[in-house]
Image (cartoon, rainbow, N blue to C red; front, top):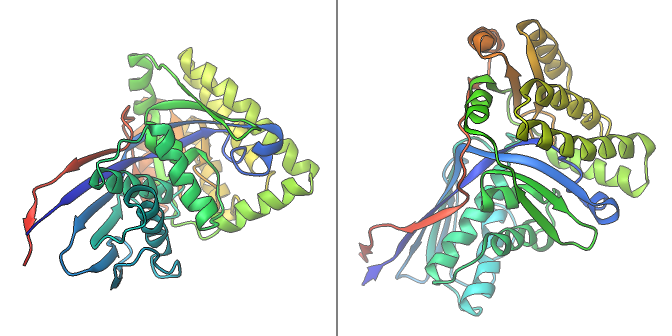
Amino acid sequence: MILRRIRARAPLRLGFAGGGTDVSPYCDEFGGVSFNATIDLFAHVTLETRADGQVELSAEDRQETWCGTAEAELPTVEPLRLLKGVYNRCIREFFGGRPQAVTLTSYADCPPGSGLGTSSALVVAMVRAFAELADVTLSPARLARLAFEIERVDLGLAGGRQDQYAAAFGGFNFMQFLTDDSVVIEPVEVAPDVLRELEASLVLYFTGVSRESATIIEQQASNMRRHDARSLDGLHALKAAGYEMRDALAAGDLQSFGALLDAGWEAKKKTADRISSGAIDEVMRAAESYGVWGAKVSGAGGGGFIMFLVEATRREGLKRFLAQHGGEVMGAKFIASGVESWRAQARLAA
């Protein structure tokens, strides 16, 4: 018997502005926005059919594996609750509830909790792989919505909406999350010279895995439900900054773009406790002496990647300084493509 092998990958993203306003209940009441772009780091998935009636799930980068009988509904408990949730929904959506004996293997180019939307990109890649196996074509919008529902509805995981849409669509996108639950995706055209200058000025510094993201998101949601004035002021400012940053980048004004990145970070810190830390604040203050135009922590906060924008001629000096503090220092290239899948070489059953 020839068994099928599908591979898929979805890009991770940098969130420039608006993150937090895509989280309920803020976007349900006020409407949220997000301005983000996908980069050349990916979440990877391999999906293989089996002949033994079993399901094997594996997160290679976390060194976790689960095996069991192929059923229509796997128990959504740890380990690998996220992968089980994806399997369950895809069995319902694409296979009419018929169990599928498969091996599902995942890994990402950076760790969970990095602030780059890793978990949601993995879900998008897994759904795309299952759809490919079932010969089902999904639009980016439908794929993103399915991934959102798996994470936020089926599994009840705290978080927003931007990550699934970034991974599905790819590129620079200004996203609007409207009060009627609809989503508007506006691609943002960036001139080639501006894009190259942005890449030349970008430094990513990995501070370590964030253990706080779920707690931060839950506190933000709680503050919103109580209409906490400080939190709401911060979220309104983040939303306004999204429009301003979109316009600054479209105009090629990177210094204004960097200043708005800074302003957005200050607003973000108002929305919940523990978004920043003493160590993060210290590094960001010290980096100012290198002529940094702007900086912010990507994602919910509490750790993960800090993105810096700096004059290109001073970039290497900033990288050397950051390397002295430990952690990983790197650049990134922006990519225009979203999730993709392909059929790999089939194999014979043992």
